[in-house]
Length: 310
Image (cartoon, rainbow, N blue to C red; front, side):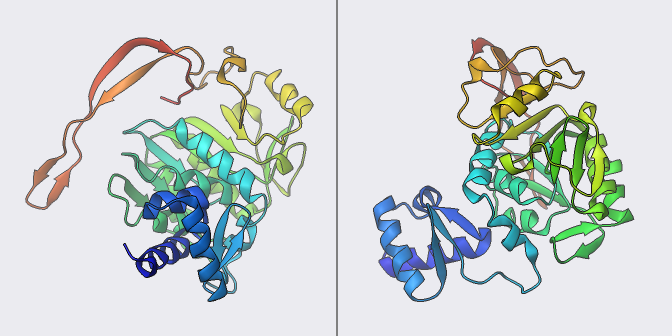
């Protein structure tokens, strides 16, 4: 691959995801991180992308009104770390609901290579999976809310009322011991429908959301199973939530230190779990294209220190 071809691929990938880390770009084009840095310097000089700490992003958001890019720029490193941790707990062949939050977008980025069924009302998330080889994406109907890049309204809510998912991964504007709140009241009905549709409910919240109330009440703490957060989350506040029986997963925190007693009916299986192993069979093929095969499920007797939502 020539330098010009490599830079074109880097530019195309950043256009698609709007932000990419050095490591992510290195994997995308098969070049060293030092080579990626040189390529980014060239692309930045050309005005195509903008270098940031640890990666690159679009110079100009895709639309003037599209606030998604502006919101995504806040706590970017924390969101990326949360996304990577949360995605690592999603197992192959699961049905996963993803909302339109910017932190959840970073979860989606790390799910692209997994065999999953994704259900979302987020246009950026749906676009992210447009070329994914392993994921099937269901995009809700509804009315486009341009500022957030999501579909809202009765049609969007109806989609989630008619499905069952293994895990719902959502974001919120704030969390206190009284519950979760969101800054966009228009999203409350659809987020509640997402939560009702799933066997596990997980919220991805960076440290700025803790001990904070936003405009619209979403749910109390009984409505969720786990929170994934970054290492800057205030330890005393995190412990107060754990004392209430809520599982809180912190980036960089050893699995062995997490409490096994979750105290909630829909809790994820964590700690010393006998992790199921999915032996995937090749997809069957019909005249109209591939048909996803039912996984041959074999339960591994091996006990390992790993956290999963299964």
